[in-house]
Image 1: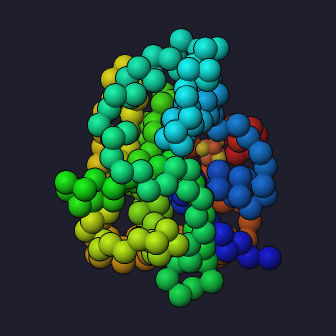
Image 2: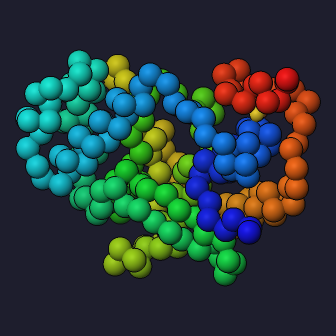
Length: 225
Ligand code: SF4
């Protein structure tokens, strides 16, 4: 049966290595993608979600690791948390155009900046892994497209130019990488999703890699045995 539900990781994996996509999403072979700081990331997301929902964070922080406490010290007074909160941990299922393909995912938080008239998709990044080059990454493309096309589900009505995505890196300091949105980007993102999906649907068997693009990949033995 053909898959018709995609996350940003489907597209990122396909873009990085077709063989990896084959093992991970066609043969459905599990492999831990994260090492070391996965737990920190999970706890940090839970802590900010907890805070944004209006709960006291003291108890949460009592037994927290030093890294989690240090991260919280960095972000707790940051202006992003003072914006109007629209939604925290918003799960979405958004159709791609009028096709039978869907995007799915979970946005960390959505804020509204009244002064700038901007809706902001906030993505907390706490791990050591932050994409070096932001633009080719599919996470912001999927999230921007999904929120824009499903805005009515949240009772919102805004133009494409009134939406942006922020990668918010919280490590030693807080640094923000902003991606603007537009109607042109909406069309371009949709075309890129559908073009990849078409190629994915054409894959029938293992794609022998010429070279390996990822140093630490758990499928190494399968590619080069
Ligand atoms: S080992 Fe290299 S070529 Fe093989 S799936 Fe992983 S990244 Fe791709």
